[in-house]
Length: 426
Ligand SMILES: [Zn+2]
Image (cartoon, rainbow, N blue to C red; front, side, top):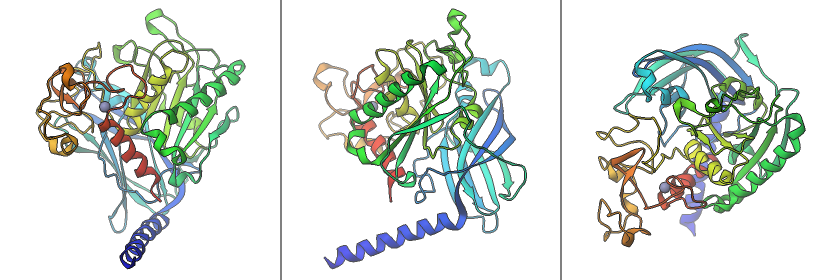
């Protein structure tokens, strides 16, 4: 009993120290940094566009330093006096995906992108890195930020927005907060949006491992009217006026549904204490996109919408890779076989120890034969991450590989659970 009491006292001292660190360096509001990122397949430069102050920081006030190191970009915040690292987070963006498609070898291109961090109470240094082909981070941007500057825009939620909270389990700083945002819903379709969003707020808890965390997640739904119903279908020459200009056919992949208007998206959710933005697109066509710590996009009115939401959220929230390898996806240089990828659910076997090796039973051969005998076993199956050879996945099947509901493999379930705990630790 004594040791439990001492252990508890020790733990609560650590947590009090972590909270006091947050209170020392941050205000409880959110700093949003919009920037232009431009370059080609190997070069990139970042140019300041605008800083914004938003009312609520919804993220953890305890876990300030990223322990996962997923994503193609990394932002770090340093106290400008002591140079102590006080916040860091990995994320990915559309520009970094564009660098893996053929067009980036032929031309230069710029994207307006955006990242959010807790709002600093004092002057800080902001540093941004991108990941090189060898997966090492490379410094691309440094600036000093003064929170008293008059050049910071204070945003409020747009007047035509309507926010509801279908699932509210408590203080955003110790919950995972998802905001479902309307895209391609007209004013007349407001009711449909709230019905669709209510359905998503239910089915999120119907999948493993989310059903183990029912009291740990808040869901918000934000209606913003679009002038027209649906989304752009470039292959059908259909172009619509919608709130966030989402479109199918991103980077030449017909079913890849995204938006390049990250600034408009952040404007819409400026008053919401979110951790993850889910853009729900009012379309019957099968498609979506999930970019790590950036956004989840999915069509709401397809028979596989439940799968689409969860699969894309797997990318955006838990940094999961696609486990499939047969598709028309154009990411021709996505995973180098010379390095261990950072995504938790695929491996090149370069450093399998850092992945799910400890979860595999001693009797399972590595690599694991693709035969019916091993179909229900956790192993190492060749074919994943758009590569038939050299990249391996944990199980024969998984919701990151095939269109199957509630079938995340044990490795994906663990990665999602670990990430939920990162956001919800008190
Ligand atoms: Zn999986």
